[in-house]
Length: 103
Image (cartoon, rainbow, N blue to C red; front, side, top):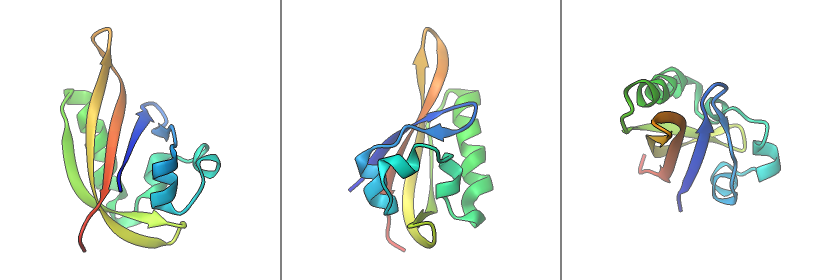
C-alpha cells in the first residue's frame, strides 16, 4: 500500500487521504491539522525537511528512506519521494509518495 500526499509549501501542511491515514494508523480528520514532518521520526525530520526544500528550490524530484510514526509512536521504515508540482511556471506544492520499505 502507498499514499500520495500533496504538501502545501509554506507550512508543509498536508492534504490527507484515506491511504495516508491507514499507513499512519490515524484518520483523515486527525491528519487535517498535522504538519507533514510531525509524521516523520524525529531522527529523520531535518533530512526529510531539507529534501522537501530542495525539491521546491530546485524544481527537482528527490527520494530517501525514513521512518514514519504510526499511531504517533511506532517508527516504521518507508521509502519516500518528493516531486514538485508546477502551475503557471511556479512550484505550487510538493507531492510526496510514501511506500512501506524493508527494515
